Image 1 (cartoon, helix red, strand yellow):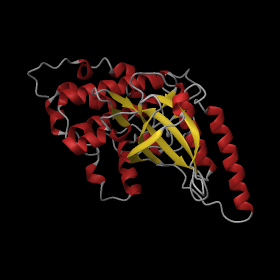
Image 2 (cartoon, one colour; image 1 turned 90 degrees about the vertical axis):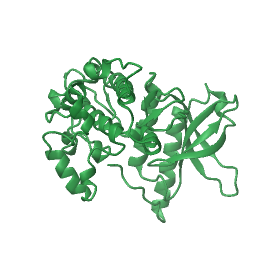
Image 3 (cartoon, helix red, strand yellow; image 1 turned 180 degrees about the vertical axis):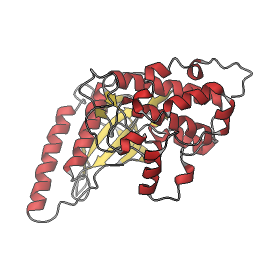
Image 4 (spheres, one colour; image 1 turned 90 degrees about the horizontal axis):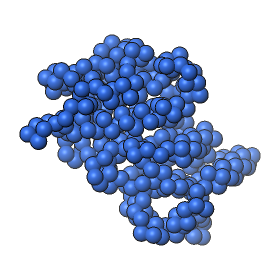
Length: 326
């Protein structure tokens, strides 16, 4: 996914560099710490494991006030997060999360350094997030299969609302996929996992298509062709939205025919596609859906609509009747 692999601290001077790096990281985390304002983060209790991410594990947690939260726990130490680039990615994610205040973004509650009370204490960074009891769209698809069209429409609208908010702030998500869309207990979808996010400093360009070269991030089956050439922009996220629509309709990733290929061969196919991934049968029967996907999968990124424009598309604005099975 474009992230550097962790390295061990090594012996001798390497160990010293590791300790210095960890002290610097700890200081940065303390600067980002919000538990001075959120005293109930102290004394939290860890519960069931919810999943595993690139750098650590996610658990359910209970606050001192009885609030159910999700925590991301990232261990620090030799052989764990020792690569400075990994630390930068983590600090960047926390920095982004602190900025976001939107109903379509999973809410950030704070972060702190945690030290286990054991004979050989292990330090870890703990990020506190809103608990999303519905899990991810990916896990929903694994449990229930392809979603009805009316639910695909609803989630697509909510994903676009979250992206419109990010893009207005000049932030590219760069890893839009079902696994990174979480659902709360009321069935509302929210964007999560901002480790691949990138801030575009110059928003004077209407398209960002000629923006700075950005390292490849994200998952290849949801990746826009231009991302392979390290030219990501806001409209690269739009391609990924189209891929998530197909994912929700088929309960699989949008390029199933590429599964037996090597990563490099699959990237080659995606980077050279002129029409995007194959459309599911339902898209052939629904003209609004077919047009929506065609807009998302325009080869030239500058020709794709922005998220706020797609929110006005008939596929998204259509009001389903109670008789509509979807």
